[in-house]
Length: 134
Length: 201
Image (cartoon, rainbow over all chains, first blue to last red; front, side):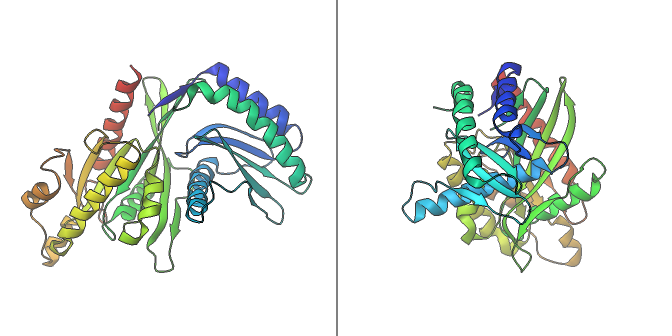
């Protein structure tokens, strides 16, 4: 399946990522699909991560963890988060086909981040719903 | 699942190198990475076991250039070939747009090629994809081993075993020496993009 996103949808998504996540101090945010394609990405201008490699690994990691959940009888794990010394990474599923990934430093608590990610996820869902596979 | 970004005029598509273990899938990507390292700005990502076998996948993003005004970014993946890694193989296939099936030309690997192609068909079916519809190129690898006196499957036998129903384009190759690695890549990129354009019409 091939899907297209136009300027309007992408601008709306970027506005959500900017206002809900980047403006509150998240260092790097990217929205990908489960095939590992990068739909949108924003960073604070100070860090430059290899987004395409991160996207491929994140999609693979998320798929592997979801399969593990199913094997032990869970639909999915609700919290997907890796804590680092300086930077941490959080994954949030958006609809069935997309993944919102945030990289954040010590200045943000995990609770606050989860709250902001949940808000952003709801907004992005509404934008992406028309483009989703049934 | 190719993604077309109309704002940045960019297309992203996923091509997966599939085939039996130790057949040369990773070597294909390594050759491409070394040959085009000026165009590939990132490191090749590999998830290997301690024994140097692919555990999950290899990944290489590759900028093809512009097609019809759109910059085309191809994401190249390999799967782990060993039979026991079927679950991870299936994960890598999610959203695939084109496939290179790397067959091992060594006579002793005949059965493994056939089983791996059947496994590909089965795994594609889990994503409701048909092996007969997805763009696919066959690569008969390790042809260079003939010079070392190692018994190889003849081209006719490989075609009969693997391609009698598929009728896909094929290349005789040596991923180690690089012969026909780029030709294989060019062909699958061309087929994937043609299929994508057809889908968007």
